[in-house]
Amino acid sequence: MIVLDSSAACDIARQTEEGLAFCSLMLADEQVISCDLLRAEAVSVFCKLCRRGVMNREEAQECFVDSVAYVDKYYSIQELQDEVLSESIRLDHSSYDMFYFVLARRFGATLFTLDRKLIRLCEEQGVQCVAILENGEF
Image 1 (cartoon, helix red, strand yellow):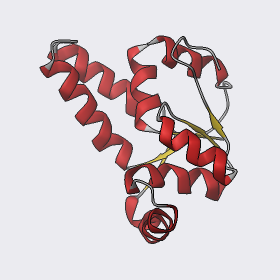
Image 2: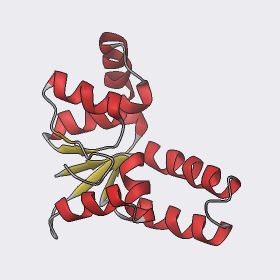
Image 3: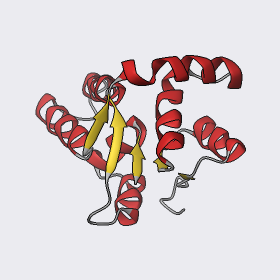
Image 4: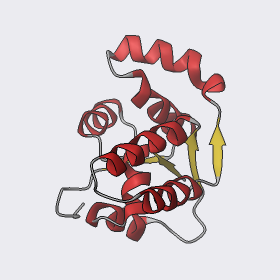
């Protein structure tokens, strides 16, 4: 089982080197889960890329649709929020990241992320994650 965060989902949709590396690790029948936060974060990412001229509106819309379609099951923020609040305070880490962290820990899943701080937290706390280097290597 994989937990997909917004950084990984957006790079997969954009077919970046890192995104393609994540794809190579996914098994055909492996379940991918995430939280509703991914949708909001992906909207923000593609709006920024469009504003900066990296992609046009149609490309941004297509990438957004693709990025959220990789997830088989979404969990609501509401069902995670109490644990996220507690863990964010305890571990002194971003509450946004903690939604993905908590989900991965709950299900014993592997977290796909490009966020270096989140990768470091997972390594420190024994939560499985995949770290992809900037050249697309693991």
